[in-house]
Image (tube, rainbow, N blue to C red):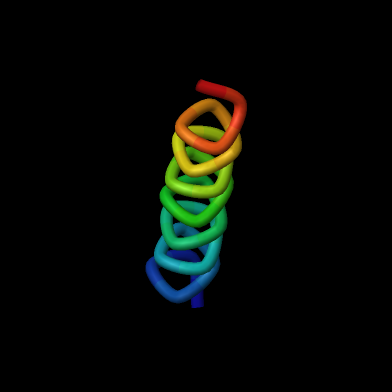
Length: 28
């Protein structure tokens, strides 16, 4: 159960990171 929760958190963090990178690319 804890492992699943960690994976969800990890996936959300990666998603947020890529989203921010894409947003920065759009600005430039």
